[in-house]
Amino acid sequence: MNVTIQKISVFLTAPDGQNLVIVRMDTNQPGLYGLGCASFAYRAKAVKQVIEEEFAPFLIGRDASRIEDIWKLLTVNAYWRNGPVLNSAVSGIDMALWDIKGKMANMPLYDLLGGKCRERVDLYCHCNAATQEAIFEKTDKAVAEGFKYLRVAYSDYDGPSGDESYLCLRNECKHYDPKRHMRSIVSLLEALRERYGDEKELITDTHERLDPADAIVLAKELEPLHLYFMEDPLSPENLSWLGRLRESCVTPIAIGEVFSHPFEWQQVIQNRWADFIRCHLSAVGGLTPARKIAMLAEQYGVRTAWHAPLDTSPISLAVQTHLDYASPAFGIQEYSGLSDASAEVFPGLPICRDGALWLSEAAGHGVEFNEKAAASYPPKEGPTRWTEMRLPDGTLHTP
Ligand code: GCO
Ligand code: MG
Image 1: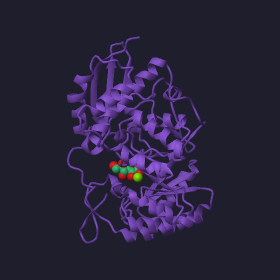
Image 2: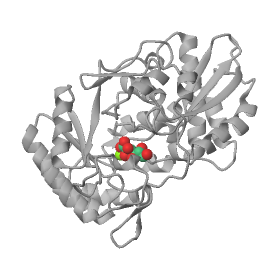
Image 3: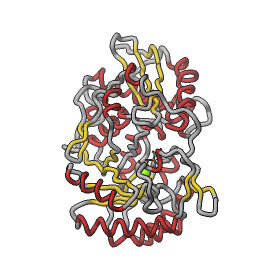
């Protein structure tokens, strides 16, 4: 069957309050189309422009079955490469091509990727709140719902506060005190270990916020609590400090949500600087590079924990879950919860039940996109403010 790319459309929508970029690729075969996630919440319009103005004219008429070839072609097309805007644009095309491939083969993606390696994909859920009491409420509820893996942090990261909202979704400049963060998270995790014994797995997100020496001290202080992992202890600029962190203690490390260059994941995996690699699928360029990252990780005994916040669309969540089912390197899957609005915009999205994620068995990734519903959740306009994070003396800090 000669399947060629006929039309590429890009949609911006925010059913869960975070800007998503969705690509629809139509082919010359009636009814055969693919959907991809190109989401980069804070530069959504730039991604849309790259796809519409640079990629679409270049791709129309090409053979839609040549995923690897098109991935490389788009990646080197501007001569200068990588970075989150370009990679997200490539990801939208890449996932749509995989979706089409699955539909052509009449197989769910996990089958196309080699078949299932496991019966369920376990999740870790977010239990962030402003106070210890409110965090306990969330963790108790999560445990009652069947979650075994609990991720906790204060909404303000550096300690209890009066504000219930999750820091990253807040639209204001924030002060951050690293030492307060270190003290408050150790006592919170101690209290949680006491509350649940060794039955539950505990995780904390450090959000690349600590300076290297502080990150090492914190990882060492958390060692007796046997965390499942400490998430993103260091910013990408400080990756080479991971070697020293690893020599200092055995707290398992997960890292990579802001990676967008192969050197970042290559050095982490090859040096075994982390136990879990957790890239953001659109930021690395889609399923094509993600499955290679998983294969590289497998060779080095590193496991995957793909990034899945609300600025990852349900399409990307489904794609990574297919990879989770099919990859021997799977470790755990992040899950941020999805609202009824997302279910309306993305029929067929993966369903969370009993602490695990379940896929629709449809061919491709199985998620649909309701354009009409999406239009009633327009993207947020205006500059991004929460990433302006400052130390108590006013110094700008990594968000
Ligand atoms: C996570 C992340 C996110 C990011 C968000 C930024 O582990 O899920 O840290 O919540 O903060 O993707 O927009
Ligand atoms: Mg994180």
